[in-house]
Image (tube, rainbow, N blue to C red; front, side, top):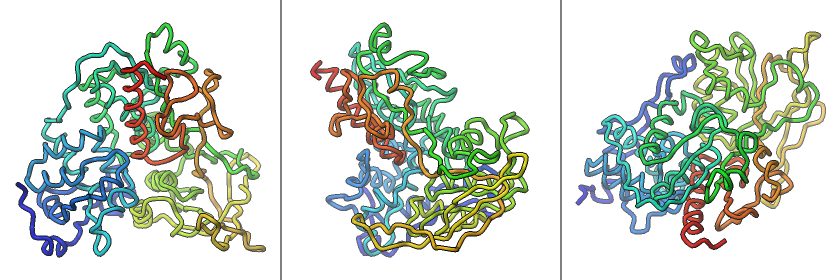
Length: 476
């Protein structure tokens, strides 16, 4: 039995703050910002849980983690069992405990949040996952007897890894194919070290390997091998396409060809995967931010990741240019708060109309127009409109475009019988994630468009259930 406090006593406990690295120090290094809970703090936070009979937080979790049960195990001091309980539904707890937008999902559904601050579910998840890793006693779930069936997973991002973990436990042979040289997809090339250390991702991938998942890097499906070849001579019985949405979008305004203009994808890949932040040990070319004026265009988590990275690379001035107000920013509140603490300046209700350059073809400034929000549309969102005569030039040397991504067409272009929509995303049945090609499933950002890590993982779990059913029945 758990030693929970009486309900009235639980609500008197304030939400425990996450210890952070000092902003003055962290704005100059790539070490992790959040330090993690100590045992006594985790115990105090876990006691705040109201132990609802119908825990709404579980309904808010895209992968259905048994939150009340794992929190109860934390209260009992059974941290390894708590981690194992999470792993029943989530193969990447140390990752999601760090990068999930819990405020919009599990914590956003927490009953405690109606009158008080919601339970810090993400911080508790990170605590038990880190505790488990520190002890070296990772709870690897038991695998079902081998079925003799083979599944190929294209892409090693969160959707692919989640699907792989569920399928391998069902007894299927699972191989994950990754085009780049390191497993993890967006987790390694898109999210900076200070928010998600690469060692954390590698540990989780290693755990999947212990479960029986095989990994192959430097394999470009659509070039190295096609989907038809996977289902043919390679002998796979099913394929899950989880390539994400990694095609950069630009603004199509004058001056985007200038030197110093980056897509967020390229900038973050160079900084994260190619380790441009460590020039003493890695020779990864990147246009210098040190001592320069750097701006990012966009208001999502990717924009925050990019400009906070630029600040650490020595940017003299770091700006976020966003055409709506701060309240409309899709980025996590924590990321915006951290960026401000680190000296990032926010130019909300501004929009670029032209990039300006010198005779050598390098960026020198951006012409901005001030914006105002109009009336709400049918969705309840207010559309921004330019204010006439408000243009001015902001001197910048580097700009990073972070206004979203599109579908990478490589896999689909080599498999014309896989239907895509007008935006290039793969069409998959909402309930089963089956595509128009037999034995081929698709999920995550390549179907839905850019979303969160945990939503992609939810799609991976859904795909795993559907693939298992197909392999078990043979019915399409």
